[in-house]
Length: 226
Image: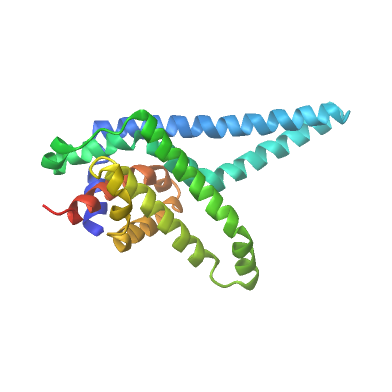
């Protein structure tokens, strides 16, 4: 795990990885911007329908923007990993080209359609699971016991599975993906917990999706039979 993290950190300056970082950040910011614009527009239209004056409508719009900001902070992990699913193949190729050229020679490229599918499933799964567990989070928050522990356990499992799948999609036939998921679960879970922790650190959280995809590539090949 430590080796995978250090190798991934050392490759952040790779041009191909920087390109993925810029593309994924632009798309993520655009999606968050669309969310904010949508909530603001809906709030101002609602104010007009209710016959509020411009000041009250402006205040409602400001509240909507604040709500969008809060929602974006809560959903950043899901959005960022979902977007990364679309561009992950480029990160995996960059890591394999430098460290695992033999594996790169036999890998299958992940089509844009499949990448989008992986990204949507990842984001949807993260949102739905955390929404389903929201009452439990609140209950634990009230008691002061275990909220963050449960959050890290759940999201570590989800993130590890998502990142691992992004790499396995290049090397494991679709018919064998279910069998692949039964192997290496502990390593993927540990990687997912580490990635979830990165998402909690300001500035570093911006690089968490890239680092996670690179770490997943190293872990996949370290466990892969020769």
